[in-house]
Amino acid sequence: MDASHEAALGLHQIEGYLYQEANRREAHRKARDFAWHLPGLTTDQRLMIEEAYARDQVENARQVTRHVAERIQQIETRYAARHRRFTREAAIAMAVVTLGLIGLCIAVILGSAAGAA
Image (tube, rainbow, N blue to C red):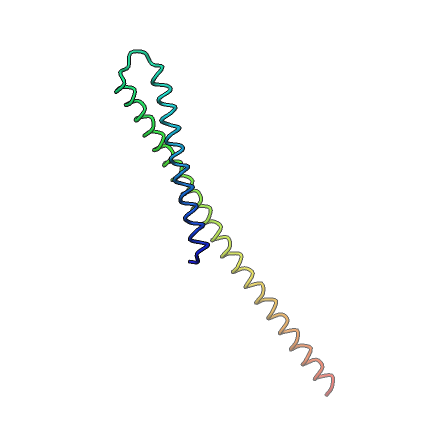
């Protein structure tokens, strides 16, 4: 793996981490805004609501990410199978064309040899 590929991979991982942190912070902010408007809750109860909501949001994000990754894998598998089938069919077609041309060449050679005799 060359340095530019490693750098791109590192940047991708940093971007993912920053995106995850931004989502986590946004979930905390939404839960805090919601909980602070509920009358009769203690600070600890509000913090518990905030943490529970943030945990749920993180788990939802993980599930969505897993689902997307599984779907990508399915599509890649289908594409690979389709590509193998296309390659196989193209190789067979090329073999048929090549054999046809060889047969034509042999016929021309034999025809010109018979005509000369």
